[in-house]
Structures are given as structure tokens and as C-alpha cells.
Image (cartoon, rainbow, N blue to C red):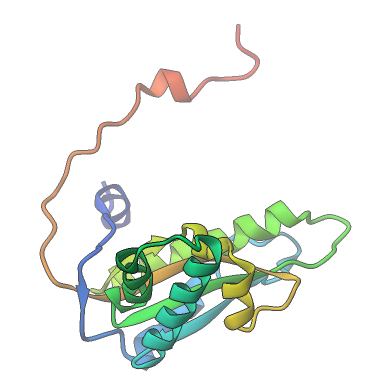
Length: 190
């Protein structure tokens, strides 16, 4: 098995992330990796917004307000939890897809390309010795959140990638794979 195969088979998301965040040099390398994602017609639909330092608290206020608008009866605990979400890691990378009208590339392909860029970004972070986790949830699809982040109406929020230094070593976990015959068949089936 190659080093790359072993890396892909054993990768895990890191949810407990501390300082330091990746350096600017590492971030630049990782963006180059993320831009190599499959991309029909080379539209490059993905862009990234970095949120770090005190700006994470400002984003937390946006999350808190959006939660309150969506759930007027939300408890103080739910609102505080929403406000703390961006503080889970020293760096938050907001993955944005700009969807354009194209005769050969439907919206779904552009979103999938942006999703591949997000995964490549995560793999790049892990290859550089950092940890990452990709999160979505209701706030990811909230138009008020998108507006606060400055997204235009032709952009979609694909997810939030939290990045930093893993605060613990993950135990190697065995992932139960489904029976290959239930997931892979040949066509036409004879």
C-alpha cells in the first residue's frame, strides 16, 4: 500500500483543535491543493473566507442572531452555544461556491466541485500536520448568515472547515466498511 493510500484510508476528522493555526505559507500551499479539485469547464467555483482571532467572536454574534431569528423561543443556552461555534478552532475557513449559468455545467456540478475543494483543503491541512473538521448545519444554509459573510446571491455556503493543531492524538479506529458487493456492481448486471 502506498503512503497516500494509507493516509486516505486512515484519515479522521479532528474536532478538538487548538493554537497554532496554520501559518500563511501553509495556507497558501493548501489553497493550491484545493484548487486542483475536479472542475468541469475550469470554472473555479470555489473561494475561501478566513475567519480568525476576534473576528470569530463577531461571527459568533452573527450565528447567535441567526439562531434567534430561526428559533425565537431558543433558550439562552442554545444562543450561547451558537455564539461559541466559531471558537472551536483558531481558524475557520468558510467554503463558498459561486454558481454561474453555464450551458454544460449545471449548478450541482459546481457545488460538487466546491465540495471537492473543501475536502482537498482538509486533506492538505492534515498532510501538513494540522487537524480539521468540516461542519454544515442550519447556519450554513441561512441567508442572513450568507449576507453577513458578504456572499452574493449567486453564491452558496458549502461549509465551515475548522482548522488548527489537534489537541489530542486520535486513536486509530476501525471503520466498518459495508459489504463491497452491496455497494459495487457491474453494468449490465448479468
